[in-house]
Amino acid sequence: MKKIICVLGLLLAGCEDPIRVALPAAEDKLVIDAMLWRNLDETSGTLEVIITRTADYYAEQVPYVSNATISLQKFDMLFMAQEETPGHYYIYNVDIAENDTFTLSVTVDGATYTATETLVLSTPLENLVQGENTLLTGDQVEAIVTLTDRPEPGNYYLMDFGYNNLLVTRDEFYNGNQISFSFFYDMYFPKNTPTPVYLMGIDKDFYTYMQILISHVGQDGGSPFATAKSTLRGNIQNITNSQDYPLGYFRVVERDSRIFTAVDE
View (cartoon, rainbow, N blue to C red):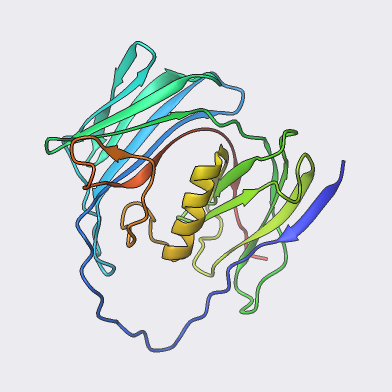
Protein backbone atom coordinates (compact mmCIF):
# COMPACT_ATOMS: atom_id res chain seq x y z
CA MET A 1 0.00 0.00 0.00
CA LYS A 2 1.39 3.36 -0.96
CA LYS A 3 1.67 6.16 1.58
CA ILE A 4 1.12 9.61 0.12
CA ILE A 5 2.25 12.71 1.98
CA CYS A 6 1.12 16.23 1.21
CA VAL A 7 1.02 19.58 2.97
CA LEU A 8 -2.06 21.82 3.08
CA GLY A 9 -2.17 25.26 4.65
CA LEU A 10 -3.73 28.69 4.58
CA LEU A 11 -1.58 31.76 4.06
CA LEU A 12 -3.04 34.59 6.07
CA ALA A 13 -1.81 38.11 5.44
CA GLY A 14 -2.43 40.89 7.95
CA CYS A 15 -2.24 44.66 7.88
CA GLU A 16 -1.59 47.09 10.70
CA ASP A 17 -4.63 49.31 10.14
CA PRO A 18 -7.88 47.43 9.52
CA ILE A 19 -10.19 49.05 6.97
CA ARG A 20 -13.97 48.74 7.21
CA VAL A 21 -15.40 48.60 3.70
CA ALA A 22 -19.01 49.57 3.07
CA LEU A 23 -20.84 46.49 1.76
CA PRO A 24 -24.40 46.06 0.46
CA ALA A 25 -26.96 44.60 2.86
CA ALA A 26 -27.32 40.83 2.71
CA GLU A 27 -30.40 39.43 1.02
CA ASP A 28 -32.80 38.07 3.62
CA LYS A 29 -32.59 34.29 3.30
CA LEU A 30 -33.36 31.36 5.55
CA VAL A 31 -30.27 29.24 6.29
CA ILE A 32 -30.73 25.55 7.21
CA ASP A 33 -27.61 23.64 8.29
CA ALA A 34 -28.75 20.02 8.79
CA MET A 35 -26.64 16.96 9.47
CA LEU A 36 -27.71 13.43 10.36
CA TRP A 37 -24.60 11.61 11.55
CA ARG A 38 -23.50 8.34 13.08
CA ASN A 39 -20.07 7.46 14.44
CA LEU A 40 -17.92 4.98 12.57
CA ASP A 41 -19.04 1.37 13.17
CA GLU A 42 -22.18 2.44 15.06
CA THR A 43 -25.75 1.85 13.89
CA SER A 44 -27.55 4.91 15.28
CA GLY A 45 -26.87 8.60 15.45
CA THR A 46 -28.17 12.15 15.81
CA LEU A 47 -29.87 14.75 13.66
CA GLU A 48 -28.60 18.30 14.25
CA VAL A 49 -30.37 21.23 12.58
CA ILE A 50 -29.32 24.87 12.98
CA ILE A 51 -31.66 27.48 11.49
CA THR A 52 -30.68 31.12 11.04
CA ARG A 53 -31.23 34.00 8.68
CA THR A 54 -28.54 35.65 6.63
CA ALA A 55 -26.66 38.48 8.29
CA ASP A 56 -24.68 41.45 7.05
CA TYR A 57 -20.93 40.86 6.81
CA TYR A 58 -20.14 42.88 9.93
CA ALA A 59 -23.03 41.59 12.05
CA GLU A 60 -21.90 40.66 15.55
CA GLN A 61 -24.83 38.36 16.38
CA VAL A 62 -26.24 35.37 14.54
CA PRO A 63 -30.02 35.70 13.88
CA TYR A 64 -31.20 32.26 15.03
CA VAL A 65 -34.72 31.13 14.10
CA SER A 66 -36.88 29.59 16.84
CA ASN A 67 -40.24 27.77 16.79
CA ALA A 68 -39.61 25.84 13.58
CA THR A 69 -41.30 22.46 13.08
CA ILE A 70 -38.77 19.85 12.01
CA SER A 71 -39.35 16.20 11.14
CA LEU A 72 -37.24 13.35 9.79
CA GLN A 73 -38.87 10.53 7.85
CA LYS A 74 -37.41 7.08 7.15
CA PHE A 75 -39.79 4.83 5.25
CA ASP A 76 -43.01 4.91 7.32
CA MET A 77 -41.30 6.18 10.50
CA LEU A 78 -41.53 9.85 11.44
CA PHE A 79 -39.33 11.54 14.06
CA MET A 80 -39.88 15.06 15.44
CA ALA A 81 -37.04 17.36 16.48
CA GLN A 82 -36.94 19.39 19.69
CA GLU A 83 -35.46 22.88 20.00
CA GLU A 84 -32.88 22.79 22.80
CA THR A 85 -31.45 26.30 22.42
CA PRO A 86 -32.60 29.10 20.09
CA GLY A 87 -32.32 27.88 16.50
CA HIS A 88 -30.76 24.51 17.46
CA TYR A 89 -32.89 21.38 16.96
CA TYR A 90 -32.08 17.71 17.67
CA ILE A 91 -33.33 14.14 17.24
CA TYR A 92 -31.36 11.44 19.06
CA ASN A 93 -30.97 7.67 18.64
CA VAL A 94 -31.96 7.48 14.98
CA ASP A 95 -31.17 4.10 13.38
CA ILE A 96 -29.03 4.77 10.30
CA ALA A 97 -28.27 1.99 7.80
CA GLU A 98 -26.32 2.26 4.56
CA ASN A 99 -29.30 2.02 2.21
CA ASP A 100 -31.84 3.99 4.26
CA THR A 101 -33.38 7.08 2.69
CA PHE A 102 -34.07 10.05 4.95
CA THR A 103 -36.30 13.03 4.20
CA LEU A 104 -35.91 16.19 6.24
CA SER A 105 -38.87 18.58 6.51
CA VAL A 106 -38.59 22.07 8.03
CA THR A 107 -41.56 24.44 8.40
CA VAL A 108 -40.88 28.10 9.22
CA ASP A 109 -43.43 30.93 9.02
CA GLY A 110 -45.85 28.88 6.94
CA ALA A 111 -43.27 27.71 4.37
CA THR A 112 -42.03 24.11 4.18
CA TYR A 113 -38.54 23.08 3.09
CA THR A 114 -37.48 19.51 2.29
CA ALA A 115 -34.43 17.47 1.24
CA THR A 116 -33.77 13.74 0.83
CA GLU A 117 -30.42 12.00 1.30
CA THR A 118 -28.80 8.62 2.07
CA LEU A 119 -25.82 7.68 4.22
CA VAL A 120 -22.26 8.25 2.95
CA LEU A 121 -19.65 6.02 4.60
CA SER A 122 -16.35 7.30 5.99
CA THR A 123 -12.93 5.88 6.83
CA PRO A 124 -11.08 5.93 10.18
CA LEU A 125 -9.10 8.98 11.23
CA GLU A 126 -6.01 6.91 11.93
CA ASN A 127 -3.72 9.47 13.52
CA LEU A 128 -3.63 13.15 14.43
CA VAL A 129 -0.47 14.64 15.93
CA GLN A 130 1.16 18.03 16.26
CA GLY A 131 4.01 18.77 13.87
CA GLU A 132 6.92 21.19 14.08
CA ASN A 133 6.50 23.06 10.78
CA THR A 134 4.97 26.51 10.28
CA LEU A 135 4.11 28.73 7.33
CA LEU A 136 5.71 32.04 6.40
CA THR A 137 4.81 33.97 9.56
CA GLY A 138 6.04 31.20 11.84
CA ASP A 139 3.18 31.34 14.35
CA GLN A 140 0.85 28.62 13.08
CA VAL A 141 0.16 25.22 14.63
CA GLU A 142 0.65 22.16 12.41
CA ALA A 143 -1.77 19.25 12.75
CA ILE A 144 -0.63 16.12 10.87
CA VAL A 145 -3.52 13.90 9.74
CA THR A 146 -3.27 10.29 8.60
CA LEU A 147 -6.07 8.30 6.99
CA THR A 148 -6.49 5.44 4.52
CA ASP A 149 -8.96 5.95 1.70
CA ARG A 150 -11.80 3.50 1.25
CA PRO A 151 -10.99 0.92 -1.47
CA GLU A 152 -13.67 1.91 -3.99
CA PRO A 153 -12.91 4.89 -6.27
CA GLY A 154 -14.73 8.19 -6.02
CA ASN A 155 -14.63 8.95 -2.30
CA TYR A 156 -15.05 12.46 -0.88
CA TYR A 157 -14.34 13.66 2.65
CA LEU A 158 -14.93 16.71 4.83
CA MET A 159 -12.65 17.45 7.78
CA ASP A 160 -13.80 19.73 10.57
CA PHE A 161 -10.79 20.94 12.56
CA GLY A 162 -12.88 22.98 14.99
CA TYR A 163 -13.35 26.75 15.27
CA ASN A 164 -14.94 26.73 11.78
CA ASN A 165 -11.77 25.41 10.13
CA LEU A 166 -13.04 23.15 7.32
CA LEU A 167 -11.31 21.22 4.57
CA VAL A 168 -12.63 19.01 1.75
CA THR A 169 -10.64 16.39 -0.12
CA ARG A 170 -11.25 13.69 -2.74
CA ASP A 171 -9.35 10.49 -3.51
CA GLU A 172 -8.49 11.36 -7.11
CA PHE A 173 -4.74 10.99 -6.42
CA TYR A 174 -4.73 8.59 -3.45
CA ASN A 175 -7.52 6.10 -4.17
CA GLY A 176 -7.25 3.14 -1.79
CA ASN A 177 -3.98 4.39 -0.30
CA GLN A 178 -2.86 5.86 2.98
CA ILE A 179 -2.31 9.62 2.98
CA SER A 180 -0.75 12.00 5.49
CA PHE A 181 -1.12 15.76 5.23
CA SER A 182 -0.64 18.86 7.33
CA PHE A 183 -3.28 21.37 8.30
CA PHE A 184 -2.11 24.68 9.77
CA TYR A 185 -4.13 26.49 12.42
CA ASP A 186 -3.62 30.23 12.59
CA MET A 187 -1.97 32.16 15.42
CA TYR A 188 -5.25 32.50 17.34
CA PHE A 189 -5.74 28.76 17.84
CA PRO A 190 -5.74 28.15 21.63
CA LYS A 191 -2.90 26.09 23.07
CA ASN A 192 -3.45 23.33 25.63
CA THR A 193 -7.13 23.13 24.69
CA PRO A 194 -8.55 19.74 23.67
CA THR A 195 -10.27 20.19 20.30
CA PRO A 196 -12.37 17.50 18.59
CA VAL A 197 -11.46 16.96 14.94
CA TYR A 198 -13.93 15.12 12.69
CA LEU A 199 -13.47 13.19 9.45
CA MET A 200 -16.68 12.40 7.59
CA GLY A 201 -17.61 10.85 4.28
CA ILE A 202 -19.58 13.08 1.92
CA ASP A 203 -20.94 12.75 -1.60
CA LYS A 204 -19.79 14.58 -4.72
CA ASP A 205 -22.57 17.19 -4.61
CA PHE A 206 -21.82 18.23 -1.04
CA TYR A 207 -18.07 18.20 -1.80
CA THR A 208 -18.64 20.67 -4.66
CA TYR A 209 -20.96 22.78 -2.51
CA MET A 210 -18.41 23.02 0.31
CA GLN A 211 -15.54 23.76 -2.07
CA ILE A 212 -17.41 26.80 -3.36
CA LEU A 213 -18.66 27.87 0.05
CA ILE A 214 -15.23 27.68 1.69
CA SER A 215 -13.74 29.70 -1.15
CA HIS A 216 -16.45 32.34 -0.69
CA VAL A 217 -16.19 32.84 3.06
CA GLY A 218 -12.54 31.95 3.65
CA GLN A 219 -11.25 30.43 6.86
CA ASP A 220 -11.83 33.59 8.90
CA GLY A 221 -13.53 32.08 11.91
CA GLY A 222 -17.04 32.79 10.64
CA SER A 223 -19.52 29.97 10.22
CA PRO A 224 -20.30 29.51 6.52
CA PHE A 225 -23.88 28.57 7.40
CA ALA A 226 -24.78 30.90 10.24
CA THR A 227 -23.69 34.11 8.50
CA ALA A 228 -23.85 33.11 4.86
CA LYS A 229 -22.68 35.88 2.52
CA SER A 230 -23.49 34.07 -0.71
CA THR A 231 -26.56 32.87 -2.59
CA LEU A 232 -25.04 29.45 -3.21
CA ARG A 233 -27.91 26.95 -3.38
CA GLY A 234 -27.82 23.67 -1.52
CA ASN A 235 -30.05 20.61 -1.77
CA ILE A 236 -32.96 21.93 0.34
CA GLN A 237 -36.07 22.95 -1.62
CA ASN A 238 -38.90 25.30 -0.67
CA ILE A 239 -41.99 23.30 -1.66
CA THR A 240 -44.30 26.17 -0.70
CA ASN A 241 -42.60 28.75 -2.95
CA SER A 242 -39.87 27.39 -5.21
CA GLN A 243 -38.58 30.89 -5.97
CA ASP A 244 -37.77 31.58 -2.32
CA TYR A 245 -35.11 28.91 -1.84
CA PRO A 246 -33.10 28.61 1.39
CA LEU A 247 -29.34 28.44 1.86
CA GLY A 248 -27.66 25.52 3.58
CA TYR A 249 -27.50 21.77 3.07
CA PHE A 250 -28.84 18.48 4.47
CA ARG A 251 -26.36 15.60 4.56
CA VAL A 252 -26.30 12.10 6.10
CA VAL A 253 -22.77 11.09 7.06
CA GLU A 254 -20.65 8.59 8.89
CA ARG A 255 -17.78 10.14 10.82
CA ASP A 256 -14.75 9.43 12.95
CA SER A 257 -13.02 11.76 15.38
CA ARG A 258 -9.92 12.36 17.47
CA ILE A 259 -8.95 14.97 20.04
CA PHE A 260 -6.18 17.38 19.09
CA THR A 261 -4.39 19.35 21.80
CA ALA A 262 -1.70 21.77 20.67
CA VAL A 263 1.12 22.50 23.08
CA ASP A 264 3.72 25.26 23.08
CA GLU A 265 6.95 24.01 21.54
